[in-house]
Image (tube, rainbow, N blue to C red; front, side, top):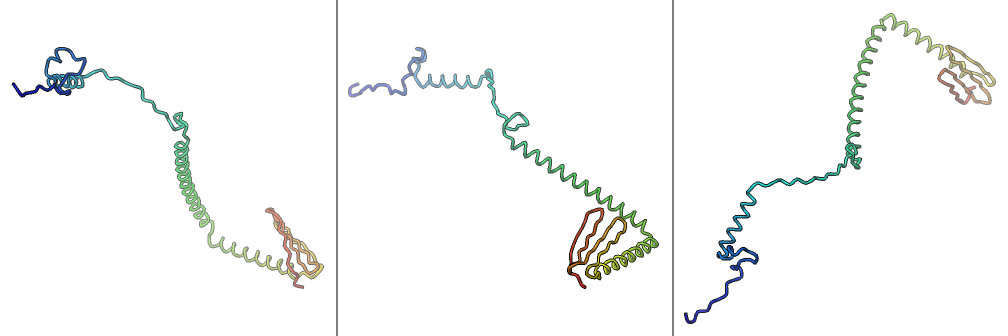
Length: 181
């Protein structure tokens, strides 16, 4: 074998340090396949499951967390739904009450009752017109008072001003206008 040189074995073909002599006696590729097979077998063989604790920090204050936004939003939505249903129920109740009131008013408003109400209204208008004319035509220095059903009307015409005071159970109203006389 003249002219032939023996080269050292490449590093990738050498067995890794620490392998058993039996493995190192075998050619490296066969040993590597054997180790690969052991690893595949170790993965495929069922082993005990290791459990670990999973930590989760609750954010909702209804579950002991610290973020109040989800709870506040849920309460807001709940309150809006409650208000909408209460408003709808109130509208239905008001409609029923209005229908009942209209039915009772229609039953009470017979043609004879309507005629009587109309006459009373016209008489009240005539009395109110006469009172208004008496107050408006008051001469300077004239004063007067008119009382009817808990209503008191006083007037004074002085210095070119007509001052009228109307007192009812609801309160008192006073106003002044220039005198016509």
